[in-house]
Image 1 (cartoon, one colour):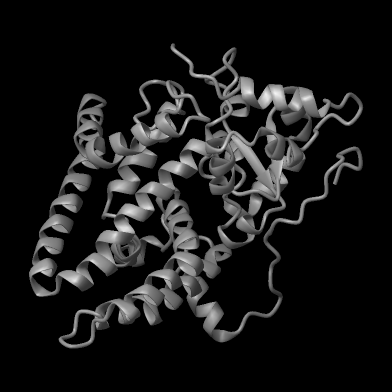
Image 2: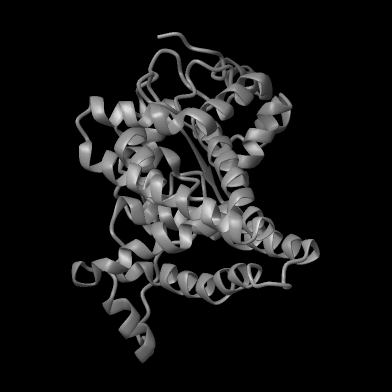
Length: 347
């Protein structure tokens, strides 16, 4: 490590095991990248807890609201964040080897709906649209035209996404001639809607608890997350990943959610493995410093969103990471910089 770097990173990196157990050798043989073995264990955890408990609520005489509440809280507090970010990683690079490619449908088609993710839509939005457009105006989830510390603007942003993302994304994909992605999304949404309608007739209370409440909650959290990831935009370089995204380091969120805090690095290198993110930040530290990238410590995106909604710039400033200790910004300068970069942009 470059000793001139004034930061120590505590986020997870890959540490190879010298002696894997037989079960780990077998499980690793299924994967394109053995570094994703933790994903496979997480999938097993979901299949042993969330899936059977969710299905159990549909059985006659089983459902009670006092059971629905701990079921929902367990999934939200312990599993939802890691699951969504696991799907995020799997969307960028197939989890299972080609000869086991049918298993790649497990996350989006079988497990995803239990966490509010409709089949194929996440892939279509994130890979088919968001990354190619990089938060610029063609990006349907672009934050540029919003005042990023305005709860009114965020409310408009969320409701537009929630009610209009499918028709808008369909039009975008067809315009860009990404017809295969479009077909996959429409088939996934269609089957999901028919499935939910059927389940509502079977047991509407369980359907609302297991599928519909997570759908609303997850879409809200994803939009709050994207809002925070692209909240601080340099008006002079809105297409520059170093200046239209942020990085969060040394956060408990990174340990739970596969280093998702390294959003600048992710936009620079979308297929880079999650365990390589801290190394990329350290190896390119001088570039981050030169580009005046915004880095925060000990925060996650939802906390940043919450601090923006309450205009708590002083608190945000306290978690700002100074990349240039030779010429540090004052607290007032950091405060003003953060506030300046949340202004609405009209390009």
